[in-house]
Length: 301
Image (tube, rainbow, N blue to C red; front, side, top):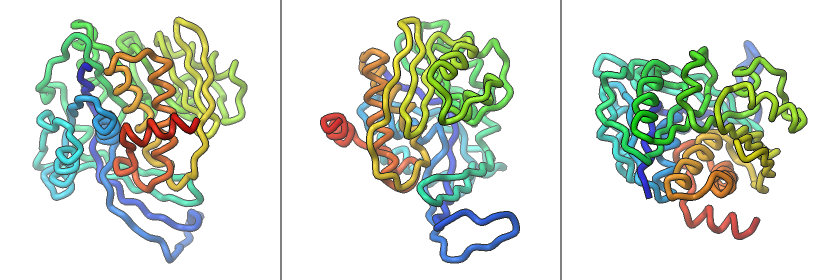
């Protein structure tokens, strides 16, 4: 098995659970609040590590208590955090998450995440490794890292989340792109909804300029567009508690399975099952399943 290296964000998630979301100007009482580790980079690294991959993360935290807590979480989950830099004059990233009716809305305060510069990347890619990034850290850093990875024969996965403006040349450095239907619509300018036919999803994927695109569609499942053709996988049944981090779970599981030498379709099926496990628990990083749990879910499929 090769190593998964995640270049990405680390946040403390402040989660408020309520029966519904307030409308503008309204106050709702009776919510419960949890402080849980998150950030797309941390979530994906924890997911990959729990599923058996040797995993490292590169990123930045602030010189505060949240940053120390996140380092402890990574250590507890077997993730190599030696590449996480502490920026003393900044704050650790925070995500404010409203959970209601099994869905979520997120507001992020990037803090140290957006200060993670190329000069802070202390690890060089190696041939065969899986290098994974998202859009919660500077694009210039991601581009530089992916360029190095490609130069030595490492495999690159980009999770286009959340969608921001990016140079088209970045896509030429990406082997696999993963994004949901909202992100697909934003990245391509196409009108994509949860009810869009598969042909519209496939057409939009083709506009990204990436050899392989995986479009995750929530409860509907996912569509894979690759040089081998188009594959549609249905979502697995789940008792949804909180969808926060489900996409990150999918990406981390996909990377872990590819690092284990599995092909794309096998990795996608595995990641689909992992995501189904994750939505049945509260939180992002804490909801990431173990290999045993994913195997049990696949056995019931």
